[in-house]
Image (cartoon, rainbow, N blue to C red; front, side, top):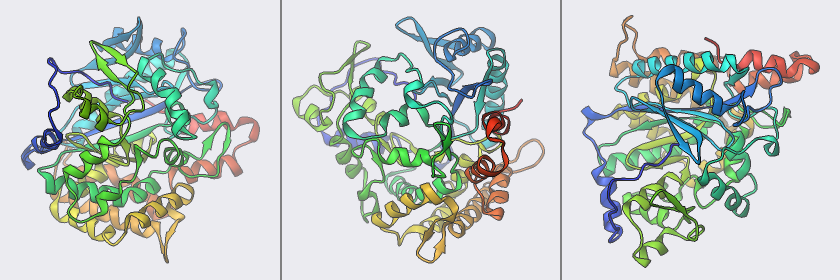
Length: 454
């Protein structure tokens, strides 16, 4: 969860039109579009497979301090504890269960993002190996139960934790056990943004199926291919999931603002301190009271978790975290589809007949069945193959070459192999866990097969 940074001055919100205007102002011409990615990863004790603690000589705080000392990251502290790092447009932050997240810089090409990611992996392995930590390419903490995982001591998480228990059954699992990869893209104007939101919501079940990677939790098979996706369905219905209005013709920024205004706030920030007497209050009521600022609004937008999120750019959030070699596959898929007009239309054609109800029903199917799920008579695998073909064509047209003369389709090769075989990362782990790995050595084998390597 990327940390929020307040602006230099407090600007009051005078009306809804001001909030809508902010989304208009965030549009960029095509030549200025960038691609960004956020990579969360679960860290475990290499010897036991249990979740790495935040505290202690071999915990995640020690990892952050080691990264700062050795590689020039600037630490951020809260109540004397190191909880984040920053360097050259990128940040390393922590989810509530000490899942480590790299929020990468914005780049023109995925080749630049790959260089940043390779550096990040080398650095965390360099320090993590000394601490006995392993970083797993999975979408869930596989062994530790939620009550066994230490909370990261950030004030915002202490506020969110009790609230989560009032609005859903699985919020603490979401906070402490799950990990994702997200892709961030720009938009030109309202029409472009809303088309991208519609396509993003439409393909969300396909993205979840393609990147399903969380079949093990609490030390056993959980019956899902994307248990992370299932967890998000029962976290907080007011701020999570698919947005019905996006599926209606003519929807615009105003509809997104109206939805966000009715979502309860977690907290406000005043002089660096969290204000909690507003927790559970819809933002609309704060606006009516005259106390809301633009910083309050921007902070509120970061606490909304739909499958596709709008906050001055667009985030696609439906994928489980992935093995190291697949981490750029999601941003590659997204860049290929969303940054070529014809390919965006082709993806829209793929899902435009799916209503909100159709899409929501399919999402419930894919978290269990992934590529084997079906929409009517058609397997999700067939839709996924068509989506991949669209993305490949988009990247071919964009023709961004690396020093070897390869374009960005190189980051989709792993998906081509997966879809040719019809098997997700979750399928491979689940089959090995059930049939191949000795029950006495399952955890050891799981770590060996999913841990990041130099």
